[in-house]
Image (cartoon, rainbow, N blue to C red):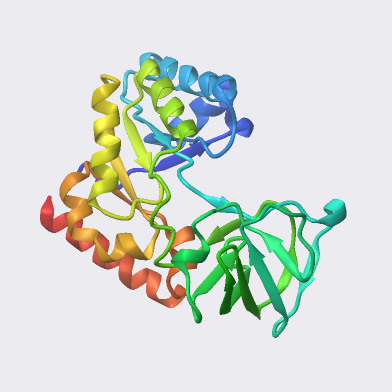
Length: 271
């Protein structure tokens, strides 16, 4: 019986050598994923070329997925470049005016953050390790938040706000350049990060068409908006990826398995 489940491996520096990749394929790797949140065109290019050589040598297809970095927001630098310790119950300001962060106030690099949030909104920092709740909107460029779950905060950490960040573009300038590279290398799939709705997928597809690219689009379900708009996203996508890591920041961890089953069942129903 033909195996329906495929093994997708994310390739990085530790498996860039040809023999290592060959061993991975012989051990069961079916698909190669290149994560463009890390690395550069030289390192990705070596991996890409080695996978294509393996296809020829082994006489079997090895599809390559290019995973976009996608839109993201981050905290800024800290005074003295030293981490700060946030304790549960502490009050801390969040500002969109660039400044070095302290225990009293930190910078976030998303200009529209303040207008998209309100009291009781939740802000996650560093993959959900730190949890803040908005107490009040102080001004057009500052929020006052209470620390719900504290921890050590370093510089330039990712920020997630469930249900917000709607004005972020689905593809950044870097993503578009990465897509151009993927088209030139004749990659097979484009994994689209932080999809929120049907329109995000259609925008990416339009860019592919303008660049004469024929990559299939895999929409990554990793936001609450994507979960709520799942039907319409599936309708315009070529494939769906359940990105449980980021999804587990946006929704309670105990709900992730149920949502995963729901996503899989909907995809099977559509066919």
